[in-house]
Amino acid sequence: MTSLAFLIPIALLAGLGGLAAFFWAMRSGQFDDLDGAANRILIDEDEQ
Image (cartoon, rainbow, N blue to C red; front, side):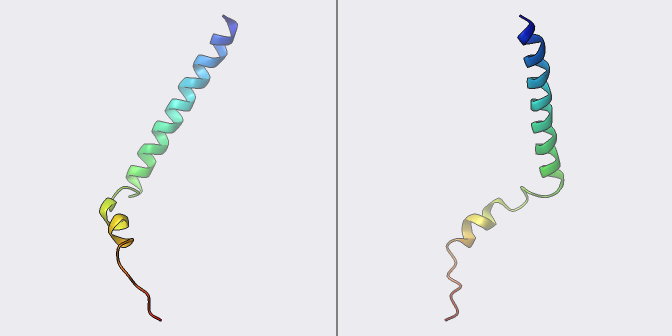
């Protein structure tokens, strides 16, 4: 039972840290161009 007293706050902090990282990624523009990377792999840019 004492291990739950340590594990629950650690799990909550890890979850809040992940949520904070997700919101940081959204604000910094990480998810702005979802189709660009998918289409970029199809473009042949060999200049040989």
